[in-house]
Image (tube, rainbow, N blue to C red; front, top):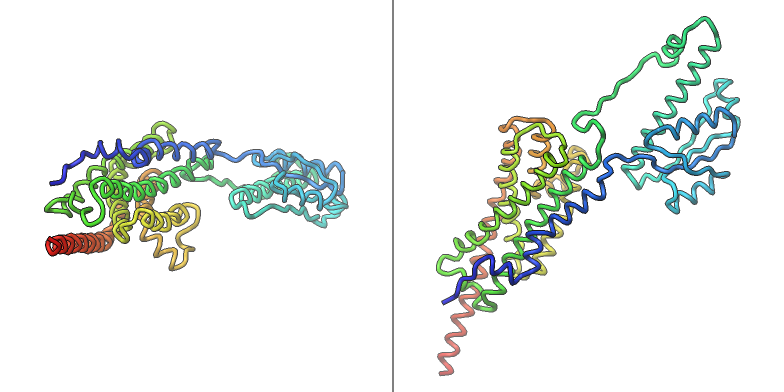
Length: 395
């Protein structure tokens, strides 16, 4: 007869499992938020190579430095010096103002302002490109306005209208301040949460099989109804994972006060479905080999691309067939659609829940897991039977 050990006793014995279920996810989430807590990228250091040294070139430099995104911190005498500084990481970009800059402007020959930046930093490169374009447009408008005023017989307002005949107003929706913490943290933390659930499930199963027995006796603790007992054990951890999910929702939309336009109830329902799907995948990885180390490798390979395949930083429409297939296998990609729909768009419950229908497909890995479980248990029973027969023959 096997003595049943409570889940709390198991957690007390397995400190690593207890850590993965309690403080470690919180620490990881806070670390991610700490990295992006500034929210808005400002005063990115850039350099300037001024080959003209004139009043207009200095005005161009001032226009670049006036941008909230850029900060002209360095001045170089040659492009080679500026390039080396960018390679060493002192600056993110450098601008080259050509010789004869003033003369070309006065002669309407459109001098070329060359800006070089490291495109490996995708986000930084996008910000620099946008800021330089805005600064150059502002500088061009100033030059054209002064030229119109110099002709006489015109007002300042009319001169500005002639310089910029069409004004544009670009309004960013759903993230008005372009807060990168709001944009990235709300996706990275759920991705980490998914990894925690899958890995936590593997650790839970490993702890039970390690504490209750090994070898041919390792399935005895599940009793006469092993599959039902296994489901009962894992179901006790669903509230733990749900509390983790609810905590980051409270953190995002109540404590940090990021915009929330929809229903918390719909997101909690999506989280419940996601938790069940992640537990199924974690159980599948464990019973593929009955080896926790290999199961962890499977889990890492499966969940590592979660953030990349969410469609937050890279559009889903541009993903190839393989990326689409892998994305559909990840539970968190279906959940994040519900979170975005509810938090940003205030979509209806029916529209958001429709995003969860593909998760019905996790019935397939559930059936595979049940077959693998039965296979491993039958193998263990056969080993037990053959061992008993051998002992009787010896007697």
